[in-house]
View 1 (cartoon, one colour):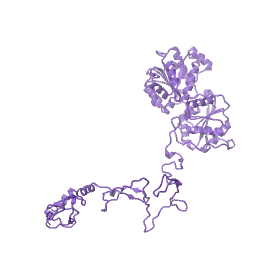
View 2 (cartoon, helix red, strand yellow):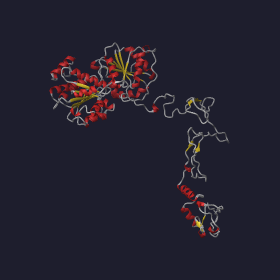
View 3 (tube, helix red, strand yellow):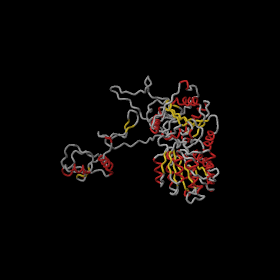
View 4 (tube, helix red, strand yellow):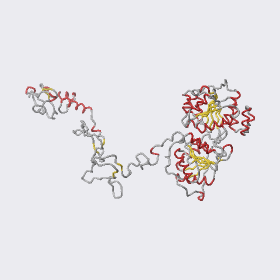
Amino acid sequence: MNLKFSELNLDPKINAVIEKIGYLECTPIQTAVIPQVLAGKDVSGLAQTGTGKTAAFLIPLMDRILKGQFQDWAPTNFVLILVPTRELAEQVYDNIAAYSESTGLTGVAVYGGTGYDKQKEAFRKNVDFVVATPGRLIDLYKDNCVDLKQVRAIVFDEADRMFDMGFKDDMKFILQRVPRERQFLVFSATLNFDVMNTAYMFGAEPIEIDVSRDQAKAENVKDEIFHCGHDEKPMYLLSILKKYNPRQVIIFSNFKFNVERIASFLSQNAVPAMGISSLLTQAQRTRVIELFKAENEKNILVATDVAARGLDIKGVDMVINYELPNDAESYVHRIGRTGRAGAEGLAFSLVCDRDIESLARVEVYLKHKLPSGWMEEEALVKEFSAFPREDVTPGRSNEPGGDRPAPRSERGPRRDGRGGGRGGDRGRDRGPQKSTGPNQHGQGGGYRADRTPRNPDGTVAVPVAVAGEPAERKKFVPSKGASDRPVPPRHANNGNGKAGHQRHQNNSGGYRKPTASAKTTTTQKVASFFKKLFGGGAAKPAAAAASASSHKPNGSGGGKSGGGRHHGKPKSGGHKPGGGGGGYKPRPSGYKPGGGKPPTSGDSKT
């Protein structure tokens, strides 16, 4: 049984305003929440869209201020209401102005996209309610224009949307600076674990009130889906508008760059439409909302999810999802723009193959299958101006927040005709290529033809080696600006007694890395060091030299023998008698190893 406002014992000034507006009986969420807020309790309210959640916290908070129920309330104290979007901030501010018409209470809306002067002036005059988006409020706090220690109650309206938009850290920043003794209220049509966890983290003990536990969406909204191809969506959109002839419609798209295309398409087909997204300035967005709310014969608004949260626009009798949202909760908020305050509403969704996964998430969240609608052939509009073909890239995230691009492999073709996948179309004929400058023959500028050899059927010709003849190798031509300095060869032995060459050409004319056999070993490095040191052939390591000398009589092994040094590689045969180091090749006349003097006859015993 719902309470009547006359039974709540509100301040007479507030009762007068409520009677003037025409409120008589509370909604279920108001019946459950208002007594708890009047008692000063922390509350977490969860209810369907369009059920009066804004009045559920504004009216009791105003009553507490007028009756002095906040402890040590001073003129500098205020109630802080945080919202995710500028449009919702303006709407809540309008409600404050309406409910406080004869109470003397004041408020201010604080959000980005507008000047600071008016907002700073409002804080200097002291206000009772501050409706703000987190970003602008923090800017004013850092400019010492607002003192968060003066907050006596804090309200998070559409808190889960603020988390989705990346305001979680900003919310924590604000909660760390407001007093712990404040009243804490949080409201939304959908709440997640992060919101409640943050509330408990900062000392709140909210009473959880959920009047939509059994049904996520409003009962008076009839929603259906139309299965169609992606290219058929413009036709179905026009056909639905023609068949039902709604008075006020909101068409939702996931992509802000697609909003103006849909609005332009409808306008070109004699269906006036306006678009709103984060691409517009704040003044433009405010103007669009005002025009949509005006009493006109037909109003159609194309929007992103910037308009899906909290906006209370009376008279919206249809919602169309041009694409299903990526998360199921946004679906509930979208269709909640119609069927408000007990009125009947229609919601249609155009579903193609790209929306299948989103459809599955929505049906799991709603716990039932969405009914499928059917459009008769004669009801389909066949003749219309074409939809702009510059469609947005599928796979981007919901707006607001920037529409992050999808991975390259999931996007469509590039503008220059190349494929979207990584390496998927690299072998495709790309046609004539543009030359960036003169080539190695001094020719350049303009475009050059494709010189790739091809078979008669157009496929790329692959050279095949004839029996007994090696396959033709492409000659390497250095690129323009390449250095002419030769690369020093490696001194590594490649296993066959020859120095490994510095690079190896492959059949395609490029280069490949040396094989494992061409890598320099430690022994080869030591040999190269001795070769550089003594200027002769590669010397043996000290251990190997000592081992070899131990088998030669008369001390004539490697190293000195009879005062002489012997260089070169010993033969496999025996040694000469007399300690001459048998098998060693004699040095040439006048040879100066290491820069020393030429040997004399006394240097050798032979």
